[in-house]
Length: 248
Image (cartoon, rainbow, N blue to C red; front, side, top):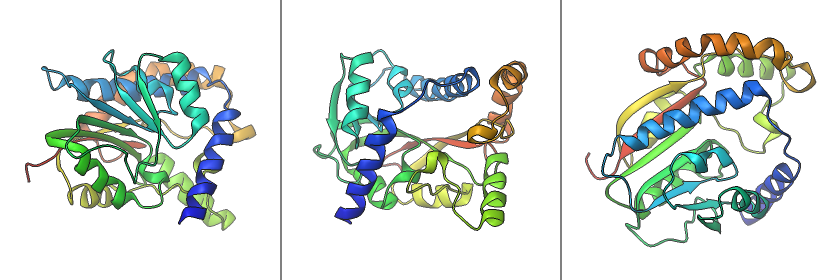
């Protein structure tokens, strides 16, 4: 297990060290995701005293609130990058499956596109439950097999006979809606599920359709994408789930 964790840490150190600037299309997609996270946060009108962001390598996650937050990532390089853009927050290099915080410490945890990349996702959710206070909120996103992207990935893996992971990440275990609900329900009560990104895949690596072609089309379809997130939450590329602790 320790050897596997070191391999994962080394991968993400290299990953964030050579990260390239996002295309306009990817930037737009990430803004859609972040807006959903903001809306989930705003459902508590009284706000939160202590918020934990898990996996702050995705710097946009740190923009979901103007409050001072605590953020963790397994990569020291990711932490350093996040600090430059959001220096007012508090950061820790930490494993999401072994959080260095006391029981009942946080009011809210935001975990975006992390659960599919950890060695033991059930242990991670147990840790989230442990450090959340009673009636604390967990906001989590994870890729969905029941989507255009999920179908395309399955087809690519069938043809190549090899795993096709996002960014060639060492662990990339997506979820079906049923699998995600089953795992979350062990520790939380699900309050709301929202789908994100109903756009079709536009290629991979050097085989991507150029952003100057894709961006205006996706931008035009953005209101439809947001509408589908509400009416067909189980079919977006991403699940966004808002859960509460202690009310089963």
